[in-house]
Length: 188
Length: 188
Image (cartoon, rainbow over all chains, first blue to last red; front, side, top):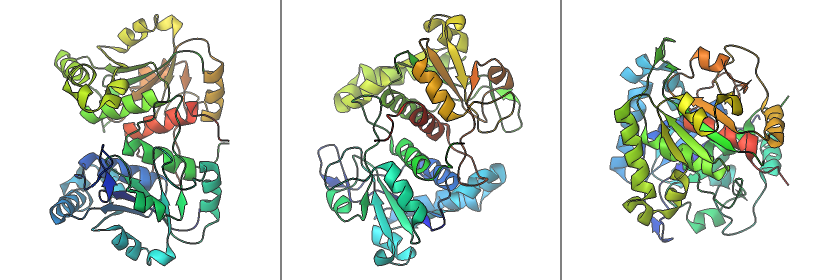
């Protein structure tokens, strides 16, 4: 992989259990876990997308504690992960940081194939390895990304299938598996 | 996969940052995330291994809330995941629930290959698919499983490699990736 890879955790617009569009609360552990996974798999940026200023301020405080404050002294490896956190108000702000929407390939993830055609992980892995443009992979909190976000994507990743019908991974687990499938070195 | 697959989250004996053997505190989100991943990938049992009774009581309360209590009404899918949680005091108790240590293939995971030979995920996936015995995959909290646990395993999984030198996945992420690599349906 040579081009820039970014991950975005979206708190709005996402769905709730009833399928309504909502804004979810930020979770401290999402920030840590996804930053660690993103860093491990070579992402340059992990966008925390939240429209509410107080929530962005909280994310920024966590970031500063671990990257500049006493957290860094205690666990330096955590600073290396959280350094890639970027706190933004909207997806447009995330795209702007990557050069603007027209310069970014936006990929979406979903637990079920609700709308549009999906791309297999095997194919997407090839696409990513050949890409020379920034790619931003979106993960939805709550019950997943709103339909308009998925509809507006350049590529929609297939759902992660498990061993049976049950498929309710946490966003932290889904993000880890997605990055592993797309980026991990090929098996020997 | 036809044989029984179990996952165990070990809070003792595990290492701290200095490499000393310690007991870690249970984390609510570990229980949820790993139960969801384990259920998604067809595990029959998720053992929470903790030697301290008060911590086991806490795990049991969380279990009961989601499997029998008001949590089940609110999010039925979560009950399906947490149903496979088994709270035990020791690894021996986990093995006993699977028929006894001599009847179980114990596999360990680690972020670095500290001791003994390791098995690649590709090879381990084949072993698991052909196995007719229960397999129990151990995940360490803190800074990983104690050396004697790894030394006593029947199979040691290779570390999950990322895109570069940084490799500090959360146990929740590592568990998700491990199960995906070992159990997920082959790509079309």
